Image 1 (cartoon, rainbow, N blue to C red):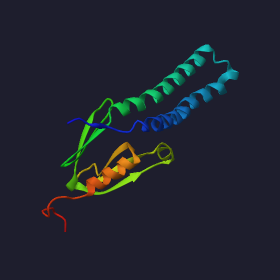
Image 2: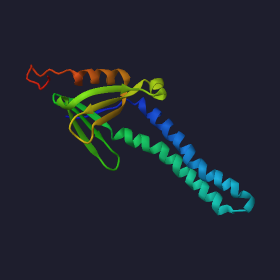
Image 3: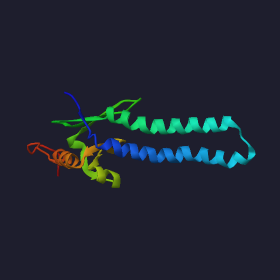
Image 4: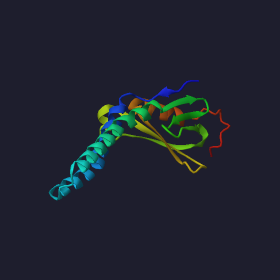
Length: 159
């Protein structure tokens, strides 16, 4: 079975967040270099600041795209399978019977682009909260409802 991709509308959300972080990461060394200008730091410091800024902004643009390409999910009769990771790949299987409750969340940027994050809280493992970001909000709600619907024919362990 193939995995489904998350919504392409989530890519601008992730890139805007990453660019916001890049402004902080690139701004600190550049600000420090500007305070050293009266001391005549030379062209080497200016070149290092330019290189650092280009590296940080380049990674802020590339990483969300790479994360998007390596994030997928599949709903099967047993539960949800999530595949994620750029360098370290993970395949997470969440059985329906382990799901205790769920949540669909949206931040301001996610709401603007119509995407959300599905959070599934499970029992009996050290990974009690698993997230699937980047879903269309309606898809996240439908997926949550489907996963919480127990069609076990009455032989489940519910009290």
